[in-house]
Image 1 (cartoon, rainbow, N blue to C red):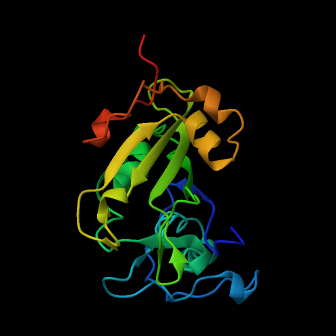
Image 2 (cartoon, rainbow, N blue to C red):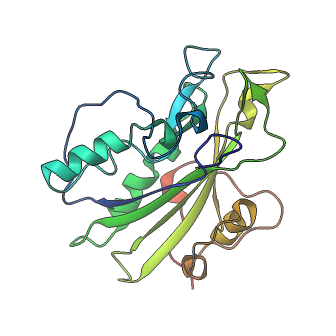
Image 3 (cartoon, one colour):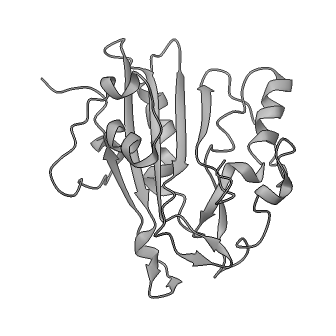
Length: 223
């Protein structure tokens, strides 16, 4: 968590695709481990023009294992510490499909992936409803690739900058791109350890091409 922004800096989850379960959605709650004053419960959230609560870790991702573990994963994902303000139609499309697509490419007998997600928190983020709203998000995914049998890791960014016009957000298309893990490390100040060296994606000169389909994702180096 960022104390100054009262927002999630990053969220991490391990997913076991062979043990997923279905649980009903719980209600939102504050995280009891930190002061309530360090969390955003409602201020900027609500019907448009306010924002939706955009999960950093998807609610379904930690819902696996024993019934007790799955129930806790379901409940934990509904803490307000796991959300960041996003436009109502924003958290979907390719961004929503990334974990599922990684699972499709993960080793068939394992079906496990690790996902790290968060916002880029910058001084240029606009203030709305008393909260500075992140306009761009990142994600890093790691798993054992089914074809190569090797650990691979990839990074992505998504922007809701085009929703921002003048002083209010408007509807528009979000932009998702594959980016190098090193570039995400540089912008966030986080380290993903050895994962950056495993990333097959080479950062292009200029603006990174947008992903139009999950099939555009590069999981392995082309020879």
